[in-house]
Image (tube, rainbow, N blue to C red; front, top):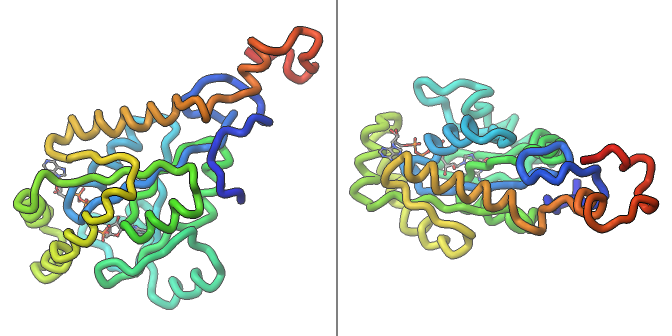
Length: 236
Ligand code: ADP
Ligand code: 5GP
C-alpha cells in the first residue's frame, strides 16, 4: 500500500472532515513511558471517537491478569513471531522490556483504505519506524506529571513484578529524550483533561486543510454545471 495517508483528491466527496468512507484514514501514533496511562486513554478515545480504530499488536509477552487474546494483544510464541517477521507481516516491530511487540500490516492498511482513522499505541522505537513509513502520520507523546507519580501508577496497576517495574522505570529517561520527535505532548495528570486534550488533537487533524476532500470542494464551488460529470451530479 502507499505510505501516504492524505486525503485523495480522486475519491468521491462528502466534504465532511470527520470519519468518512470518502477519504483515507489518518494514522495516529501514541507513545509514553510504561505506567503513564496510555492504554487507559487510548481505550477511552477509541470508545469516544467515532471512526477511530485502535490497532491490536502481536506480542511474545505473557498476558496480564484480565488481558484477553485478540482484545488487548495477540499473544504468540517467539517462533510464530519470527515467522511473521520473515513473511513481512509487520509494519514495525521492536524488542521492548525483554519481549517482542509488532504492528500487523493487514488490518492497518485495510482500515486506512476504508477511511477509518487508526490509533497505534507503540513504543518510541516503533514510532520512529512508522513515522518514516507514513510521513503524514500524527505522533503524540504522553508524559506522567513526575517520576514519583509514575512509580505510584505502576505500583497501583499491580500487574508487573517489582523487578519488571524497575526495568520499566530504568528506561524512562531514555524514552523521554525522544520527546522532540513527536508533534504533540500531553501531560496526563487529570484523566478527563488528558482525554479532552487528545480529542482536540484528533479533531484538529481531521479538520486540516490538506485533508480536505478536493472533489467535494470543486464540485460545489469551482466547477460550472456543465463541467460536472454525470457521476458527480448527485453529490452534496
Ligand atoms: P500504560 O498503558 O501507559 O502503561 P495504564 O493505562 O496501564 O498505563 O495506566 C497505569 C495505571 O495508572 C493504571 O492503574 C491506570 O488506572 C492509572 N492511571 C492512568 N491515568 C491516570 C490518571 N490521569 N490519574 C490517575 N491514575 C491514572
Ligand atoms: P505493555 O507490556 O506494558 O503492554 O507494553 C510495553 C510497551 O510496548 C509499551 O511502550 C507499548 O506501547 C509498547 N508496544 C505495544 N505494542 C507495540 C507494538 O506493536 N510495537 C511496538 N514497537 N511497541 C509496542
